[in-house]
Image 1: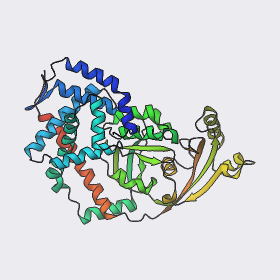
Image 2 (image 1 turned 180 degrees about the vertical axis):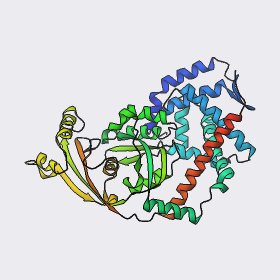
Image 3 (image 1 turned 135 degrees about the horizontal axis):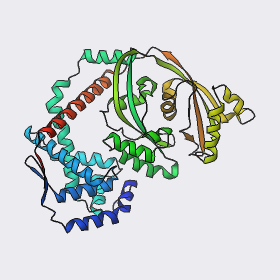
Image 4 (image 1 turned 90 degrees about the vertical axis):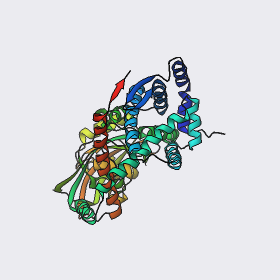
Length: 407
């Protein structure tokens, strides 16, 4: 019996649409060449199948256009992998299929069964996995020797971490996940983590994100990495430009981050031994009344100390004023406070299963000399970033040199 996961339920909801599309596809000359990439053919069947699969994944963008772009790139990647003799073995393919299915809390067999119900054949998903595994193997084989990280590289990175400002340019999506909606939010987060372009991430942020940044596509300004929770450092440093993090659970929500840029700059900035903040809790969650109260407070409260007057006569628990080490902050508080200057406010968070709105104000930061960072972690991050840069450049080269013919 197939276990029904949240993403599986989404597949079922889309079943009528995808089966209808599949029936239409059968009436066409499915195996006629539609695109030729060098010596490799993309048929109308391939395009239809990939479009169906992207529809079931609920991938952002036009499924037909995305299918065309993906398949052209994958033919280029497979050509290059075949030339270098790094095509994956069956065990690697099976492992890749299991890993991808696990993101939807499914086994590979469950995932394939759900795809089959929507009209997507196993070979379509298998081809998708093969190209990804092959490309990663090719990148390591072709460029691995060029990105060897020695002790001097690690020392330089450690020094940058401790004395210089490593700044990151991020976009964010914060999905509300109260208990009643947690499964659906996790399924959506799994889908959004597969986004590969800044425009698609921005569109998803405008549609789904619960923070004030949603209006500008989730885009954040440059910020020092040291402002963010230490637990996020390896996650963010391991991303290539345009890549999206795996879903990150926070209190009552799920966060995703896309890396738009990284700057290992020369300007020294301190790390912090303590973050001083105030949190005033407003009943009603994200109701219009609670949000109106928060807006009024934003206009009338200038400093954290002003909140004592606001909370006067109310239960003590309505106001939390605290100074904590960055590692001791709740992850969602740490992320929001990282965006703020002194006495700025965030109203992005909730507590009490979404029933209480958090009026969060940064009161100040106490600097300290940075501590060292794990050498293996830094080495892995450097390798990932350098490999991603080589991979992007090589793919652009392959595309510019390719013979691409559309019929």
